[in-house]
Length: 341
Ligand code: PBG
Image 1 (cartoon, rainbow, N blue to C red):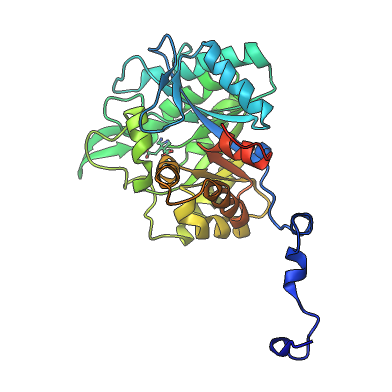
Image 2 (cartoon, rainbow, N blue to C red; image 1 turned 90 degrees about the horizontal axis):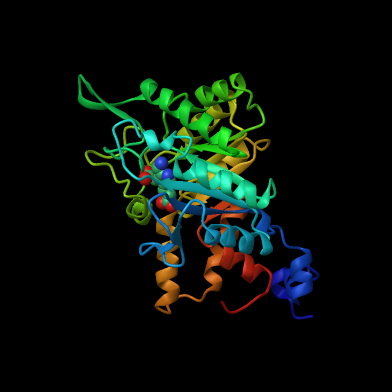
């Protein structure tokens, strides 16, 4: 027993628990499972057939009532991925983002269609924002103010209420406000209760940073702000403690699930929010730039495909119990041990 390094504890050999896959699995602290993954889906009301999305390889735009949309959801559910986050691309954009709350808007139609096809089996979450539906590309309504042009918080809440109601009426399980307006959770909770949708959950993008990692998504949605940027409403990446405050407010306002976004560059924030609020489900959104970054590294041969599950595992280990990811299906396949396409 030449084990000088262990000194008086020669029996302390951590490698014992790494000896084989079975023993590694039984002591694993983090268990990534397809049921904790949520797949974003883009529905475009202008389309008659699906179209590949250039900036998110592997993803497509779907017409709201097309069999290909049902096909995608069906395939995902077979792999154990049962939750979906729907984004809509409107026929036209206007100042007030009216297609975001139209009862025949892209997301509303897609939800109705999927309910007809699959009943309440899939968990359908609807992104609730106006940036992709508005002519200005902001998440709130621009107004003249003493600083020039500002995003009018409280006027925006009126639009969010309408969107929430239309999504609930269409059959959403979850509405997911992503615009970072103050008081958005409370405004939405109020209208849902008043209108008889107390069973609709709110997953709030509570801790959402002004980030460079949203680039591919904005080209997918054509949702980049037409002037200025989002730093008057999204968080400053230098702040972590502020995340605790944002999350606390959302929980008090009635959020059922809180979220940190992006994920990979903010693992410290995920951990901090998890420890600050151990009793609230926490989602992390691994955003489009994270997906694209890894995908390119894998495509160019710098990293093996297993890097994807390693990154998702890091997000779960940091404390997220829901992970929103464009890699949901590949990850589910890998977790099931299915190789190839
Ligand atoms: C905004 C919104 C964004 C994303 C989803 N909803 C970010 C933004 O444009 O500021 C980003 C998602 C991604 O990058 O995958 N409502």
